[in-house]
Length: 192
Image 1 (cartoon, helix red, strand yellow):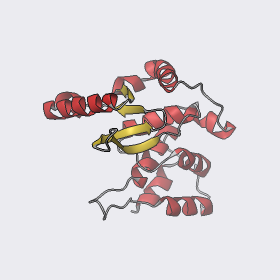
Image 2 (cartoon, helix red, strand yellow; image 1 turned 90 degrees about the horizontal axis):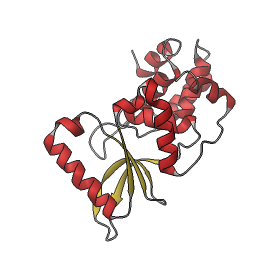
Image 3 (cartoon, helix red, strand yellow; image 1 turned 30 degrees about the horizontal axis):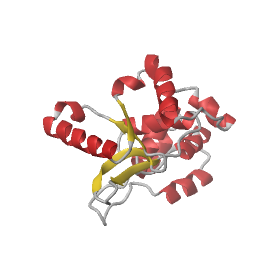
Image 4 (tube, rainbow, N blue to C red; image 1 turned 180 degrees about the vertical axis):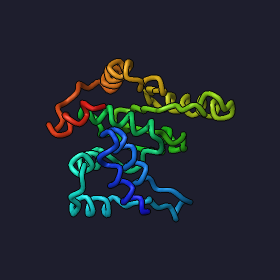
């Protein structure tokens, strides 16, 4: 079964949030540098969505509007979904950040280069793997030295009882208020 067939078959069964997660996963390039490719290209997805009339296709098309290439994990997508529901999903994904002299500091999940803001999702490996933990500390310290402010989020921030607080933290960190989103998306975000 092709990834697109599986996506269409699951469209009526998955929540809007899970559809966005699934599409982000399909759009993620995998493989060695120079040879990386996604399971589905954004162009093929959009073209196929335009033609199909399956059950759940309206939700699937809306999920594709929110999906973006570059999220490398489910929780990175969940961060983006919370930003998108507030009309604030304009940060760059998976950005290589350099210091003032042009030396590479590291790659970060979500970045606003102009305002020097970084949002990082820290998965369990960031806590349980000592080498990863120390590498992250050095990377984050160097980013701060280069003038970046950093917000770190964790799995617990996406529990239903914590989502309102997480949304407030995101807005406060970004220094921006939520902006209205299209009504069809607002209705679907309300499922989340």
